[in-house]
Length: 480
Image 1 (tube, one colour):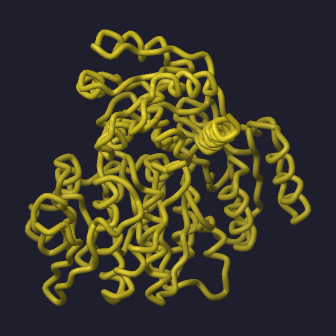
Image 2: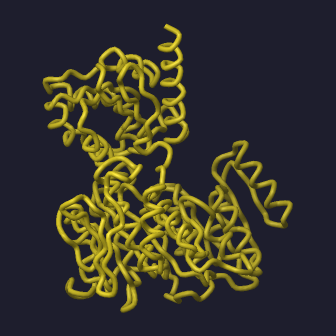
């Protein structure tokens, strides 16, 4: 990477697939198994069949959504089942496309390792058939917001782009199009990156790094190693947008081939983008220097979202967007649900839904976004990381209401601070406990630092439940 050291050390290839760039993985007559019948799994099955493969698709779960997906695939001539996997059939496949939701400890993963069956993520399968240029965005937190914001800027700037990956359209569906877009903006999780081989970003973004998913990874190093696969196929023409404020980001990217563009809210970054002394978002590239807008004009909350905006703006500039379009798009972007989403103001108390904060680092970022006193709703299913980083904030007066499976651990780790932890047995009782604690001028912040799976199917369902409970409180307040 320009001015950033030697090349990255080579990574071992866990699956016996030769590097092939954009060479399609599937040939006519291949036996392809697709594990997981979510949107991306269904799209992968269709792509493999369109390329002439004999496709078997399955899901370990038998539910309404999975059964409907299997039925649709069967109507299209694809063998599909739910409630389990045919391990013998999978073992003898030429290629297996694995859902990122299937953990390494799953039986089917063990079968694949023992049989040395080639195994890839859906984004790898699709990438081999894409003609679009790729913007790949990863990091522990902020991926979805930055991906959506980047696409929004490109759209305002008149550039042909679609969103794929974790949000938007499955990449395999895009690969099937007769006319593909000029750019695909792809949100990349560590789980997806783990099963890639030739996947490469024309413009790659690494936003931040912090411990996460320690319920799935043996340690932080293993988690970071999967993130590092973003740089696996770097080349002289690769372009990387990196958060200069995060030492772990800079260390992970060190030596990747290509050019680094840095973003920072604390000091000038060149080449890259930064927040100047007057709080203006500014771009500084050799070929163009410009000011976009004041940070006060952003609708998304928090200093971390200034970093996200700088990153998205830099990507857009590298993709050909002009300054007026970047400034207009940044000013108009409203943010996404469940990410520091203001829900209501009741009696001078602001209620904020940050249900997407499923790790401690994300919650720390959320707490730092406010200068007002905070009552923090914390809990859910613990993911293996300590809550100790929150202790200084609790000592400064952040009140905590703990709920869900993690509540006893929250109490054990944070309860010794001067501000006591209040326990609640449900999200609704947590909200009502917070209402009693909060005073006019405070923020009640749902930023759980845990997954939702003890009580809810996903963070969206948890956030929606929070919103409904708060809105019911608002109606009660109005009727009082």
